[in-house]
Length: 503
Ligand SMILES: Cc1cc2nc3c(=O)[nH]c(=O)nc-3n(C[C@H](O)[C@H](O)[C@H](O)COP(=O)(O)OP(=O)(O)OC[C@H]3O[C@@H](n4cnc5c(N)ncnc54)[C@H](O)[C@@H]3O)c2cc1C
Image (cartoon, rainbow, N blue to C red; front, side, top):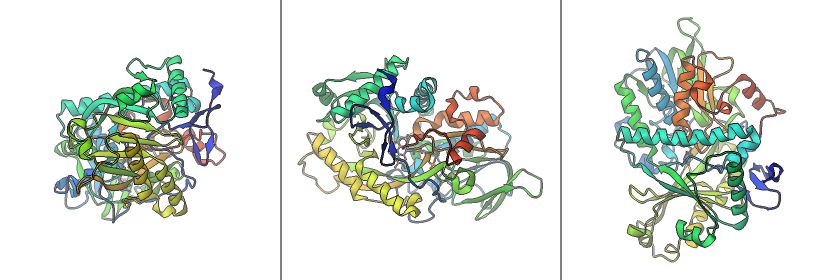
């Protein structure tokens, strides 16, 4: 395939992967669409959060509102802001690297009640679909490295869960990417073949391009192809809680319901920084921003660089006709003609409740509404957004044979949906490293709707950098590094950073 046959058109505000001779657009990630007003931001919403299914399952867990000490410590070596999977893993690796140093983790609300505690539960290493987009933006080598890093991250997560016997409903099995019309299948094929031709590893991906066979494998009636490889689903709160409990045993001080408001230079000179919270202040030498979608509220230099956007996840109890031996046994990315995607997690090793995430056409209507009402950019109190749910309903009824017309008794069906806030990175990749101009302040954030396939390597990578190791030692793609040049180019309106953010 000729390189020039790939282009990145503007579809409204969305840029994605397509071919010059089709109208179809391939969604390169699980959550797509670029915010129009990128300057918006906000602190975590303090009341009225809708409860995700994961948070509903742990209401009697004292970790939710844990405070290791009644009062906030007046000082610490390191303050980590945010108790999602990023902050929790950074604390773990920090303790392993410097067992003698004191660490305080601040969380604005309940423990792990941000995106990690509200996501769709997929850890799906993208193994080819992102490639064209990243190749266009960053070149072949970095794009291949991103694919490799996702595979490494997935293996690291699975290894941790298995080694420590973590009770988090881990499923490991074949995930399917299924294009739902001919044009999307064409773009997907071009993307896959290009990745392969340029040296990408594809021998672990089973490709079926015969629609009848793809429909049989995937059980999706309108499947035009099926790409299968290994991925996982899990209960993300429980995994994060397991790691945090180990951290607590190793001496971390966790302070929930403690929002950091300002980080400033320590006027006393005792320590480098002071983190001001609504419950007092902590002086420290090192600050880690693990605040993801909310990063710019605390660190103004990140305005327009990391932008919050609400996304919906639907919890669906399958009808009896798709339960028991007929239950779904795989996770999915269903690729839609308009660059939409359903990300499907059927919790195969747990209760069989199906999580529908991703970015379907209803989600785009929600995006438009948020554009008109930007104060909702951090609204994780949304629930039952009918436009999004309706798209899921139409999809399952027209594509899963046993679903259409199935009698729905009480307790079955479209039970509930909630919003969570994703942190859009302006150039489509996370920020890992030291904040420019702020020695001793570090960041790991901007993970879009795909952090579970990135953070298990990004967090230890950040701690290596904090320990003075080189970028190469992190093993992460170079383009994830926070540098003054990258930050500056994204801040400048005329900046030449790739505008591929798009998730
Ligand atoms: C609906 C939805 C579905 C998703 N599905 C998937 C999926 O299936 N697979 C996947 O890979 N990814 C998915 N994602 C994305 C994924 O959840 C995130 O990329 C990942 O969880 C980010 O982790 P984090 O720790 O960096 O951020 P978060 O989990 O958001 O943690 C940041 C924490 O910082 C706290 N905080 C912020 N500011 C402050 C402050 N000033 N003071 C104190 N605390 C603060 C927040 O309250 C929050 O708890 C989804 C996201 C959403 C919203």
